[in-house]
Length: 184
Image (cartoon, rainbow, N blue to C red):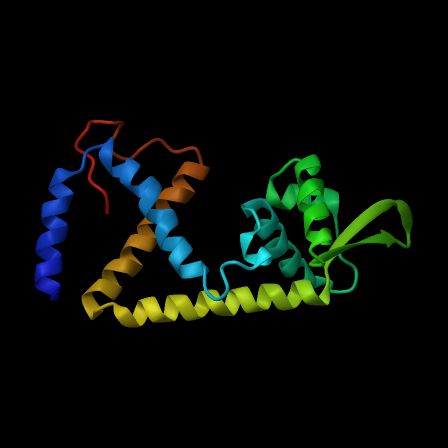
């Protein structure tokens, strides 16, 4: 389909959306797109079936690893950094440890403190997942036409700005659910 046909189709579809139907469609469409971008390789692999909480913990530990790779991070700091209860974080940590992706360490200065870090296998797993994600996004980018690339970048910038407004406690820009809101 050419850029003109895609543009006409988008305009036609936008006129059909309401404040109720657009968010409902997005609830299903956005995760489906993200799954296509992030799932690659052996989708039957146990490690690719990790729940979101465990994946988030892996990414957080990976970010900590770049700051202090041998020390690990305290559960309290991870809990604060990720915005989750420490009990939920402990459950996710237990499962990562069971998969061999993370390990607990004692703190040499305070025996009451428990630290968590990725194992070498965990670091390698995260690196492989990041590369798979980059490759999927590269393929998506190459599949887009020039105008579609610009539209995608604009849409993601708008979504980012809207998410930041929501986090800051801002009210909807259109003043509420007037029923005539259209998706990006």
